[in-house]
Structure formats: structure tokens, C-alpha cells
Image (tube, rainbow, N blue to C red; front, top):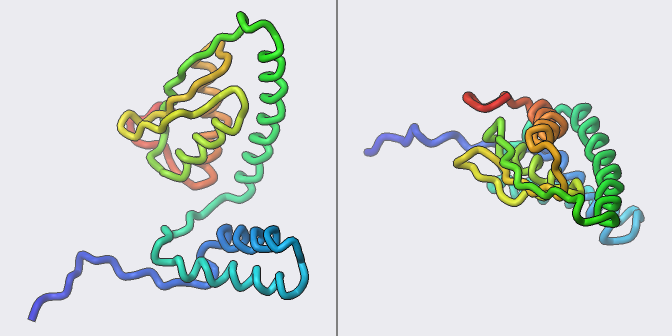
Length: 181
């Protein structure tokens, strides 16, 4: 008789609302695709929002605890930055091209948390005038192209303070040991 394998972690028990954001997104997506809020579609959205995450449970990682108030504040900051950046980029593009100072910026990552880093890169790309090109996990940095950059370090610090620090707070993460503040 062989000894049981104690190295294996016990399987997580699937709950009905383990991934509330996914459930809500699935339900809202169903309603948007059906173009209707009739009772049958509302019930379908509810069932899809509850059943699909439960069926996908073995493939999903546990949901993170999120500070929703901080997430709403960051959303407001990002939306404001998108509007202001659109105006700035329009002025730059419609003005003389000789005034542009494009730059490649290596933005150091303060954490190895994959969701934080992916969201950080997404926010950078969503904000007009900057594009995150690659997340280099070995070097712990995101390579960012900026359309116009007068001061590289100030732009890096601004991105980290406006987006990365709030993301780390939202997900309750501390800076990686040995990372720049």
C-alpha cells in the first residue's frame, strides 16, 4: 500500500459567487447581446452569471480581495487622464512636429503580482500619448513609448504614483523586496 500524497493541496470548494465581478460582467454582457431586459433575458443573465463561473472554477485562480473605493478613485483618475491626454495629444499632433520629443522609458515594477502589472500596462496604453510595449519580468520593468517626454524620470514617477501605487493599494500588495519605492 502506498502512502497518500501530502504534497498536493486540497481542492478548493466551488462557491456560487466566488468571482462576483466575472458573474456581473457575464450577466451584463448577456443582456447587452440580447438587446433586451425582459424577464426571460434577466433570468438567463442571472443563470449565466452564476453557472458559468462555477463550471469554470477549476480553471480560475482565486479572486483577489479588492478595495472597491480605491478602485473607483483610480477609475476616476484614469478617465480624467484619458480626456486630458486626448486634448494634449491632439495639440501635439496638430502642432509642429519638430516640437515632439518621443522617448522610450523603462518603468520599474514594484511588484510581481500579474494582475497589477497587467492593469498597469493596460492603463498606460489606454492613456493617449503612451504605449506599454512589453512587460519584462526578468528585469522587472515595463518598456513604455511616450509620444512627447521632456523629463523621463518625472514621467516614470508620475505613472508609478498615479497608477501603480493605487493598484497595489487596491489589491493589498506591498512593494517587492529590493524594488524602487
